[in-house]
Image (cartoon, rainbow, N blue to C red):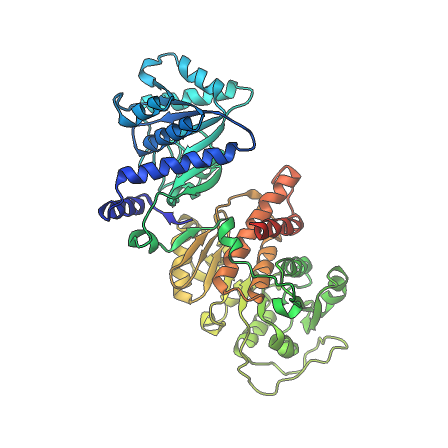
Length: 542
């Protein structure tokens, strides 16, 4: 699903019109597509009554066309028309098809509006479109307020579909009036408008679907857009094929450098998530004291106990990773490793191929580490850096040049602030711009976590995850995300696709976990982890 500002959408429509696809044809296509969505939704419920709130603009036109097509297919179609000419051709078409029309200015006490609501199985909210700026005009505002009042008094309200956007939403800023009708589904035309994925507007959007308005394949203004919104179809197309003659080597080896004495669980969550993503083998490199704690909880993994300093990864720990790095098809560094100076030295040694061969006071027990007596510029596998790994990177000069090409960085706003020297407020106010700017500057893929997670690539490509939920605002959920991404990267997905797929699966798993529990408050990272299976299963069946 493409992602546009209001001005970009206007430019797209203008170019399409100049190239022979008229505004009238685009409206006809939008209305027909909207009608098809209504038919799909009602298939199992056998609904047959549909009410459209019709405003003066293009959204009202889309709604009238949809109502007309539905009337022709046997639906009882009702249009409640506000501030639109009575001799409108689209109104006449609906009446000719057997639909019923009432103009708001002749329904002083909202008697007819109430009758329509009582009959309707589905409501199409087409009063206002994407170009609206607050505040609302009185006549529109009163119809919205009355609609909300009527539905509050109903035993069962209709299923609500917003046409292009919930009426009253500013489709650039995300502002929304208090009389805005919350939708179950927003059917947006051609592309998702940027304001729909901002708060408070997102609270009114419900599920999102896009209708094709017939834009030609060679339309530059549309196809040159570099930002999209992730959906099931997009992510399903990214997942690797799983042939019947596959073996564990087919799906790669994910090497995870994770954990410390204070953050034992981070390593476990990331390791299980990597396996759940579908990777063939997970190798866990953890400080030696953590091995006995974790090994029994993840028997499917292989283990590399690392030299440690009071339970944290020691500076010379990279010596034990020579062979595991050769076998790995992707590497994750960061979950729970802490920010001790010795661990920072380890990370710098790992990135530069250096080894600290000085004798350490804390060894790794019976594991004899290989010793490097000279510098070696070993090529690291594709890499993901998360959590404490990001905070440590910020302490290493020219860190972005030391990472493997197109490393995936997964900061939350606080970690992004450390990496960029911006304030968290600056980052949160301009999430897309910040993620894109630093992906280009650093030459790596940035996954800026939070509500509407942003994935940005150095070439300007960007994907937004259309999820904002407190279900994911719990400790450990970031470790699950990092594990998913490295597991997908290990299976051969490129950096950007692995980041998009991992972030989408993670977000959907959070929503599913909260649905299963009946609340977002009680969701734990392990609940998100357990929901990954169901999300991937659904993706594989699409």
